[in-house]
Picture 1 (spheres, rainbow, N blue to C red):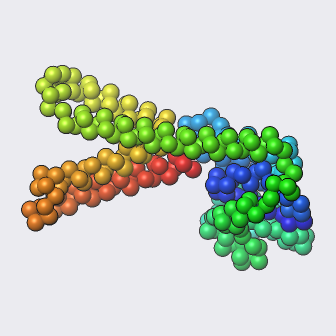
Picture 2: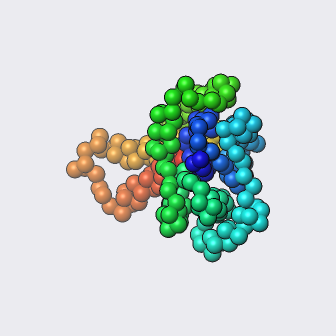
Length: 276
């Protein structure tokens, strides 16, 4: 029996693995992974992560075993890794793997974490990356997959929902950017209409609204940041009709370019955090 311990990053990228029931392969998830998924959901302003429900149903279906590593059996191995730069989830995964190794049972870790990969290789434990799990999913035929149809269908529904959400969030980000650009183009008329105190009030409201927008739709906010940064750089070249010979590459101009790039990087950072 081959034991495969699943890390959080693999579940995030390959949720279909939760629906695999392969003869002679035992998938395991430490309780710390579920806690990490819950923490990620809370950081994104979501009450719970749908993947936790899928893990629970996979456990009930027998495709996954959830292991509590906060037990004396695993704690003795956990102490080996305490002094290193490892998260609680990393330590739990490695402790499980070392335990199987000590019992001379076949074990592999499915992870993209560099720290886990390094420590696993040091202890002679094989690591499956994203492509390794993907190949396992692709090569495993429907005829031998004994997991319930309901579970597999729920996982497929979840993946479709995630793709739809991704597209919707990107479109919202694009539309908000277009709206912001129209305000920028007509800022003179707006200020002339609402006067000084109206402008100050609008700025304060906009600040609060942007914060709420980021907390509730981080992916869309990241798209807005990225596009605003790109637009800021494009606008720098616009007065000279993008003729580089007319552009004055002085300190102020270069600083503005770096400001635009910084906004773009911040946007990408928010996009990645939202997707995770």
